[in-house]
Length: 90
Image 1 (cartoon, rainbow, N blue to C red):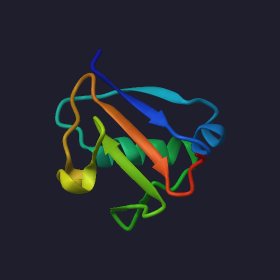
Image 2: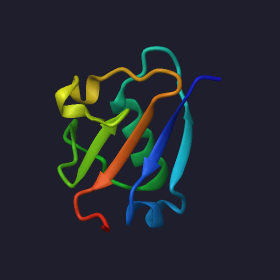
Image 3: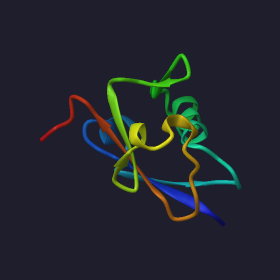
């Protein structure tokens, strides 16, 4: 099945309980869909008023989504989404 890998950077990995997730996707899904799923499943606020939470940097295949199409950026099988809390450990 098509999926994306989600990498969680500390301390977010401790909140979720893992450093990496695999999320199954359907055709034409966007970053927004993935972040909304994570928000509802893991009770973390990744989206505020239909915008990325400024407390996180969201990368798609190591590129900031803000230089792509933001939350409307399409994801495809094998993509990697990295979620970096602004106050991440170093």
